[in-house]
Image 1 (tube, rainbow, N blue to C red):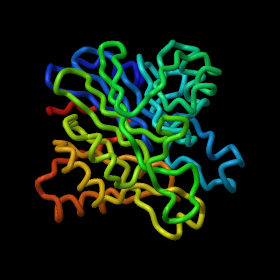
Image 2 (cartoon, rainbow, N blue to C red):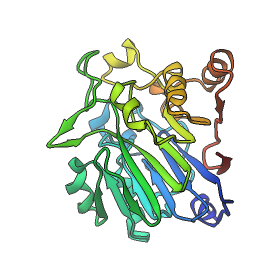
Image 3 (cartoon, rainbow, N blue to C red):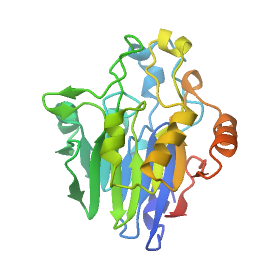
Image 4 (tube, rainbow, N blue to C red):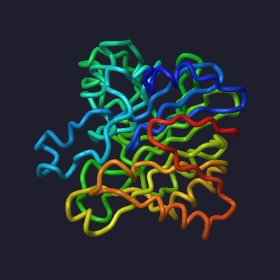
Length: 282
């Protein structure tokens, strides 16, 4: 049985949530109701193969995907934004050929999602929608299409809709998971999370620095910023993401653990193994 099929069959007790890391920013999420939600699955090696994304090898995977794209078994797929490690047609296309599902994404991606044959549900910050018994709350993220300078990180609104999003996924009443997408701190994010009280926070921790930004890499939260955001959101669990798949844009798990243990001793955290589901009490 492959990882995705095993995740669907996994029994989740009431009041708990199952999470499976897929590498980079990809996760599977499921509550007691059984609906499987995938967020930003990147299961191909498209970035390494396509010269559009840089010189050969820059974006090579450090490890293979936990399962093939066509084996992705989800009821709903949430896409946070258009960057290729978050919206990957080479993953979604083969998956859709196996099983239809709804793709929730910023409206700017409508044409590309519909070209894949998926049902498209546009996501608007502050406008929750129920899909297959799961309530999805889109929230803003502060990011940029490309690095143009230190002021490029921002909450961007295009034609009345946010271009970069995170999601608070309520799999059961009171059982909520926040996937931040790609982001840096921003007051609008803090305001959007007020009252949602996600119990699990899946946050990017690869940070940002001059060397990577000179390569055109748009950065993310540092470990300390992620810990502060988890605390502001009142999340019980902090789970790191966006730190493992690409050597050029990684963060050490040792740094994450050391920072949390020394500076944020009250924050519970989990560093999951890719492809190994965990069930968390919230």
